[in-house]
Amino acid sequence: MDLYSKIFEVLFPVFFVIGIGYYLGKKNPKIDTNFITNFAGNIGTPAMIFYTVTTTGITLAVFTSYFFYALVMIGGFSIVGLILLFILKRDLSMELPPMILPNTGNMGIPICLFAYGTEGLGVASAIASVIILFHFTLGVFLAKKKFSFDVVLKSPPVYAIIISILFLYFNLDVPVFLENTTFLLTYATIFLVLMSLGIALTRFKFSLKDSIILALGRVILGPIICILIINKLDLNGFAAGVLLIQSAMPSAVLNYLVGSMYSPKKIVDSIASTIVTSTLMSFITIPIVVFFALKYFN
Image 1 (cartoon, helix red, strand yellow):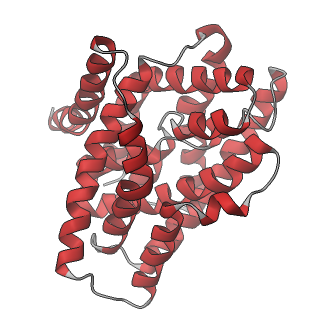
Image 2 (cartoon, helix red, strand yellow):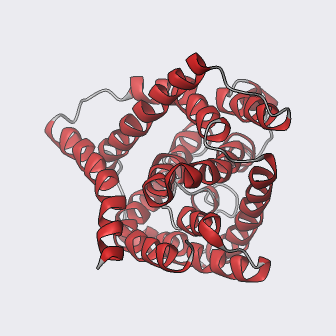
Image 3 (cartoon, one colour):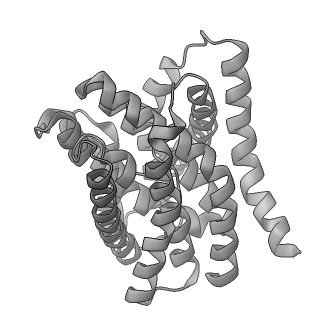
């Protein structure tokens, strides 16, 4: 019974805040979330990356290890995603990002924090760093079918990842004022972005028929691929549990934002459908994955 109570304690805060956003979005369809998007992208997410990487006790060895494991995981997602898209006769480039870039930041980080504490937070951030980096490199390349260094150079989260790694490499102490500041920004960002996700769910138009297979691939095949990787690499402990939880996250909303800038409307609508359907499905699948993570990787 303690395990079931733990799952409730882990997931209720996250789903509750998403629910607040959904309620606000339904009550006021014109509510403006541009502030949240700009704040999260330019200030909140970089602060969250820096805080979670440099102040949670994670070592450079652990960070680089799980950075690498996340790359392997994305490789597995890509193979499955390409197979599904090929079978469904969909665009192999523009519709791949929702399959391979899950919501490891907005949803994954707080869930891992509540499941495994600050240690889990550091590992979750290492994995999320890979996904964020890929959004602004591979994600843009697949949507635009052309690589753009400008997008990378104008991305504050990328600089936050680099600075965080330098702090780990040189074993630098984070000044107290900087730790306190990024602490406040981190938890403000988690709340605002989760609420923004709830609002976004009221706005995206989606077709269950067109997106159900891709959504199932994201939230069900994702964890299965991760379990195979965990077994093959003989991973264990809480860090393996964090990797498993992160693999089960639905498609990230950032896929939609990137797609809307570079892809045709038909593709963008398909991406939105996959995001909404996978997010709704994840309310069922994530509790199951968290159960297994807490039971077998502690």
